[in-house]
Length: 268
Image (tube, rainbow, N blue to C red; front, top):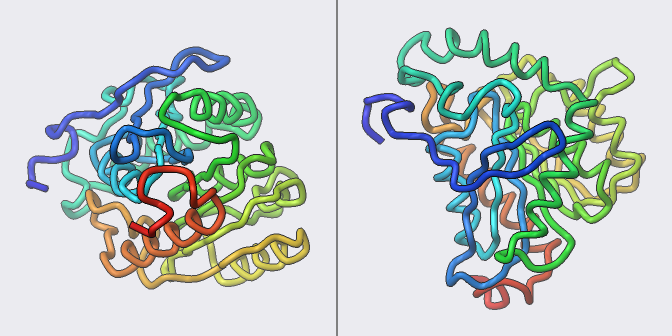
């Protein structure tokens, strides 16, 4: 990736979803070969729908899945409207951009997500590129919180990955970890070791909630900062990114039907 900045590379939505409060752009990454495959909902980070999300969704799709990444901030503007205008790998650029980005995150309330998530999941299942009702969800940064909520809302979400997620455990009555009591998914978490939004005591509390709900889970801490998987920012950590991809693939392959989708039965 060149040093021209995120915006210069173009925003990548490929379709528009009808949702209760309007329309949401989305990026769709079909499985190789064009045949129907198990579906995975990709929940973006606070920075938004952009080329790095396309790259990650394409990689997950290459394992034999159809991946849908919606623009969850559709109420705030288009993906292009909200995209960073500079290179978030430059010193201070990410911190400057995140001020308004986190304000958007705060406005995306649990009540709004309870309206949006069923629509995103229905849109994923309705795609001709998707087979089966059981799907996976993978979420990044604030998207990890949304992914957990998706499992609490929908019993056919059978796999959830949460990566460098913040605020998964809070003392509020709408804390994401409290939704685990109605989930039936298997979970894999890769927390960031340098992350004030998910300190060790919160990681432990999340593990306790997973155990109390009787859920199968991997609850690990990876070295690096919050946002380690985002190669278009200064937070990128290659080792933890690759570790996350390996953990996510293991999760998806062990939960979604291995006989569905091109090439998955032989582990390709």
